[in-house]
Image 1 (tube, rainbow, N blue to C red):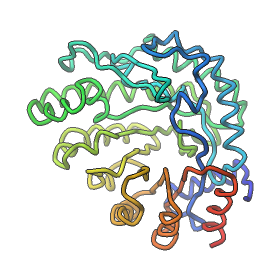
Image 2 (cartoon, rainbow, N blue to C red; image 1 turned 30 degrees about the horizontal axis):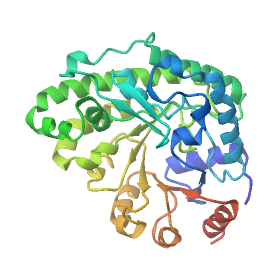
Image 3 (tube, helix red, strand yellow; image 1 turned 90 degrees about the horizontal axis):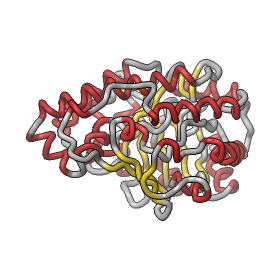
Length: 356
C-alpha cells in the first residue's frame, strides 16, 4: 500500500469536502475492536462501575494513544489518526448531569439518567470549572504534548440531541414525551444546544491547529478549520415529523456554529436525510452495521446524500458491499473506512479502489 504524506492526505480531505476529489474515494482502515474500554485496554487503570472525573487518570492512557497511533499509521491510507479526550466516556451526558458507568465486561461505558429529572431547569449552563470539562481539557493538554505535531487533536465523542433526550428521560420514554410534551422538549433541546456548542468551542480553543484543520475523535478524518463530529443514534427511533420539528433546528444551529460539522447516523428504521442534505451540515457519515442493511439496500440513501453532501461509509463492509460501492457510487465526494482484520485485507481493498 502506498504510504501518503500528511500533506497528501490533507489535500485529499480538502477535495473530499469540496466534493471534487477526482482521485476518490478516500480509503482508510479501522483495525482492532471498537469497544472503547477494550480498545484502550483500560482494565488495569480505569475502575468499573460508577465513574467520577477523578477516576480518569490521564497518564496511563497515553501509552494506549501512542500504541493506537502506531497501529493505525502502519496502513493509514488516505486517513490520519486523531486523538481526543478518551471517547469511551459519554461526555455530553456527563456534562448535562447524567451519571457515568464503566462496564469492562461489555467494553463500553454508559450514562445513567439523573434522578428525578423533570426538564429544562435541571440542565446546567456551561461551566469551564465543571469537573468533567476540566478533565476533558486535561486530556487535550497532555495529548498536545504527546502529538508533537504528528497527528491532529479533536473534540471528543459528543452525542447529539436525540441521544441526549434518551439519556435524560430514558429510552423509550423520551419518544412519548416528544409527542405529549413538545414545548417542554423544545426548551430542553434549546439548553442542550447551547451546552453542546460551548463545550465544543471550549475544546477547540485547546486544540492546536493541524495544517489548517482539526481531527475527528474516532474516524481518522481531517476536518477543515474548527471541526466537530455530531452523533445522532436515537434519531433512528423517531419519525420524520418529530425529527424535523424538534431535532433538525438544533442540528442546523450547531452546524452553523463551526467551520465543519459531520453527523454520524445508523441505517436502521429511519434515516433523516431529508432534514440534512440541504442543511449547513458539511458531510454525513452513515454506518454499515453488522447484521444491518447492506450497501445495495442503502443505495437510494447514498445517492440522495451524494447529490448534496460528501458521504463517509464506515463499518463492517463485506466484499459484496465493497464491490457494489465500487461499481455504483460516484467517487468525488465519497470516503470509505472499513473495519479490517489484517494488512492483507487492507491491501486488497486499497488495490480495488485505487487501481481498479
